[in-house]
Length: 486
Image (spheres, rainbow, N blue to C red):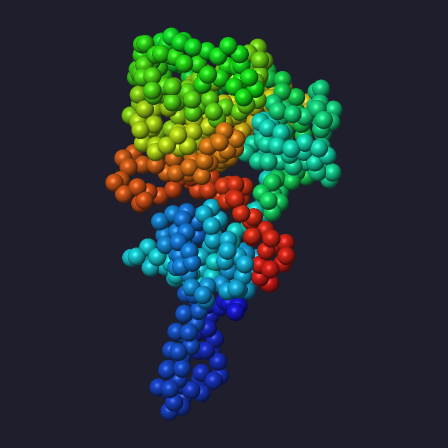
């Protein structure tokens, strides 16, 4: 069965009837009552058709209760056997489309039909999928893992698995001469599209040598005046020899006993925040934090300029509901945040966001050192998108461009955090839940009533596109031409 989208308006139909010759004859006849009955029926039928194809709600699917319904951030969408399915380009929606199987968390859909505001429920006549899997992606990031080698290697960078094919246009800088020279801690500037497995197939790839250089950071954004003293601790034991599984400088292999509180104060007049000498708390935060630090970072020698000496602490802060990054390597998480989160996976999501932030800062040095390779304009574009504070007056004002840049940076960190969590063995699907729990100042008793903030919704979309266990049937439907004809 097919449902055809209607574009005719009730107003247009009414004007057409009134101006027709048949209309004038009817008005002059004794059939006036019958005419009005016919006209009313026509108008009601047209209004019903239009209501059927009105946009009732749109957004990311946040939960499913198949086969009857699903939710879009608090709005319940009810389906039936007569509900049609299609893509944005389609004019005909099919009830027997394989897209019905794509009603999954993280998919972005437009629901056509009616909306009951009193009940917060939409009744779907058709469900249209946005083509997120088919968009062109571009950006820049450090290679944190070589997922596979060979003639078509796959590099994990910037929250994507980027595949280099024989058709990819590649270029290299510094000591890099070919793909055989590319590994972790090398930076890649890429452009491409996802394939049906979720990998990003690069059409262009530029590889940059990891030669960080100094850059001028904006005071008050990248560099803050602060006083910091970690809690005093005594080292109890340490393994006699580090291994590849247990890299050097990895805090989880050190058993410490905290003996005295530390503190941090932002700004000269800032409030003093305590870093308590709580062994169980601080050990947990350190253990989870160091797990989401990319392995390549932990394996770098201490004197390597790319090395970020990450450290993680819990501190007392009743206002902040996310991590705090200080001095380019210290990541602090409020005790109140730790208590609100439900498990280590959610804590890992917050700490991984901090790790991603520090990787963003490091990319400023990479961009500055590769202006000749990237070109001034390209380097400026990369810096403006990925470097906190660089060439920006402020990211917290009302400037539209600044807000968009800030949003893109938050999305980048969100992608990278999912990648870091997955590589560390955490459940990346817990990340959207973490930010959902932290969004309100005071959480309600019914946690199921919480809405998903923008970062959670974006992470759900990435999880749906890149971290699904089953094959993405929507891609197969498109490639086979089964998603509905125009």
